[in-house]
Picture 1 (cartoon, rainbow, N blue to C red):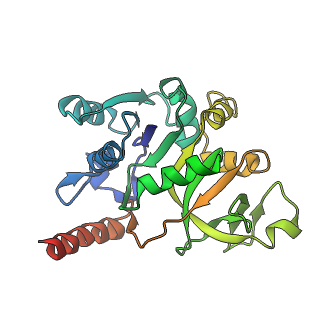
Picture 2: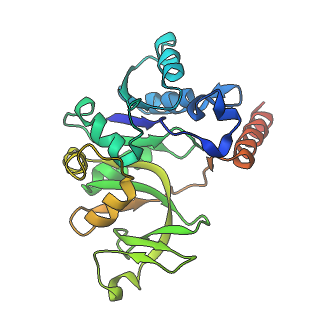
Length: 251
């Protein structure tokens, strides 16, 4: 399997930390988040990775060049224009071509979910896309039917629903929060590349538009796991405290 790590974001909610450092290089437990993600993917058997860069691109490029991670790490440069997740995948697609599915992983997610289990679920199902999804609290959810396949999106604050399916289908769906980690097939990768060529776009609208055509399934880990988006000061502190607590429990 190959992987793409999203590391191009501006990290505005973490300012002033991100005024001088990209969010992907913010440390938790004395280790940059980007290194944590690369090592997790490497240890799960991923041999080639692509990291996209925009904000403080030179700092990330230099960090990758100066460190040996034991795997091939390539850069998808978005210095000219921040392309968001969907546009970022489209630009990086030429680096991710092959026979293997691709894991997409946000660099700001501090988690210990079992990558191998998710990969096995994806491979057994034959799905086009597998999304890490769970029942944590948020305002915007993905909608899944009884079989675990995506059928739309809902904002529970406003009641807005987006779906290619009729109301009688979406009314029966359960709501799960997307965890920022997904596995996509090469055919889905080609579909993304042709969705809005050269444009900036989030991958979520693509999934909403294509969930009636592609098989997009939810994956929820079978055992308890940590999941923290470190993109805000309070959640970054939470991740750092969680790491300290873990170290104390295992010493």
